[in-house]
Image 1 (tube, rainbow over the protein chains, first blue to last red):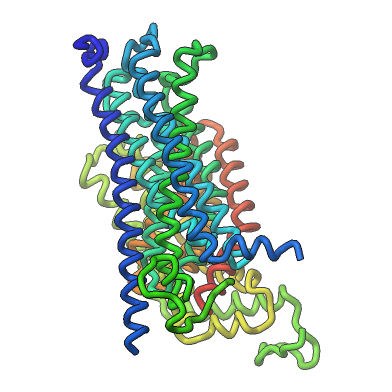
Image 2: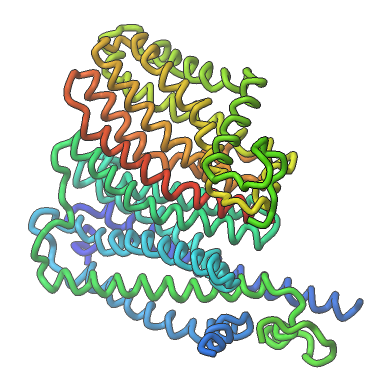
Length: 53
Length: 258
Length: 239
């Protein structure tokens, strides 16, 4: 296990590279979800305002 | 007419529904493939005889680089379709794709320089690949900046589509000029992907990663596309049905594209 | 065809040819520009100023400046030509002239090509004429000057064409300066690479035909496609 984490001595570069990529992927999912939720809320508000008027 | 199915397909309610239904079909295979690729690339694949374990950065670097280019192409093609056939949904695809592509271009730059440190001894080398990737990142920034500069969404769509088309014609010119420039100023740089034969134990995880990244892009694109379609749709009845808020039929909105 | 052009100055009854219209446009733009001479001089002064920064910032030794002269000249030329871009379509868009062009029934690509040509004559060509002088100030030997003149002349053609696209895209944007640079500079990289290389070869006294040919190819490619993109962008922005 330690040998795996050590990455033949290249751990200071291999793991950050994976972390950055997975981080970008995570952020992409998070942003997309947030964008969709916001769009839904905005659409809902528009519909309610229309109903009132 | 043969075009009716095309327009039905491109109608916002249809796109919203289909995109929602398709998302898991991209997301789950992507998750499985990415996990398989990670295990294969980090654990099962043997160390490289020259680069040791450092080459494993390739399994995230190369697919990111692939996405950075593919997404730009998707953006330009979608923009072109939107310009020619005045298809709103195509513009929504382009708008949804840009931030994803920019983020993966950034990931390519960061992983590339992290790979460069142990291989070249420096985080940044003016290597043709990294340099054109950096320029691609600027192109993405310009595209998103231009899109954000317009209040009117339709105008933003169409103007940025022109830029995307101009950009995609220029990407190969920029790339080859950078390669040419580099060949003049430096000796041959380290060829980190240039090995003619990669054993299957190294190659298969890479291919799995390529597919996984592509499907991941598809899933995120579909999610963003739904948001874009909703934002572009004003007061359509399908929206109330789609988000299940106000019961439908209590008021009559204009139905677009149905 | 059906729409008669407003007072083109040509004889009545016969529709002027596209070439004649383009020539009129060119003349008009040149005449207007010479009335506002400060706009003509500004990019040149800027170019001279940026070129002056490098000896002050790096070294006054001509033997060392000579090595970086090609880069200095091209970076300065790129920035100076960017500076002038904002004015390319701005005045015509503000007073509605551009809209009239778009409605005139004439091919907008031709009219924009003429405007771009005028812009090059007013900024690109003067830059190309000033560049050899700046080069001498940077310690470049006299035999390199024809090469520098040729490469800057060809390079600025493409820069004007790319700039026309950028200016057309940002027509509807207020305070477009920074955005315009962000859009145009990445597209201008090939010009920078080939131009600076041709200049470098000329300074070293080596044959510079290859990069010069590539610069010419870029210019021809730009001439065929850039007016199309600019016209599309102008139409969208006028809608």
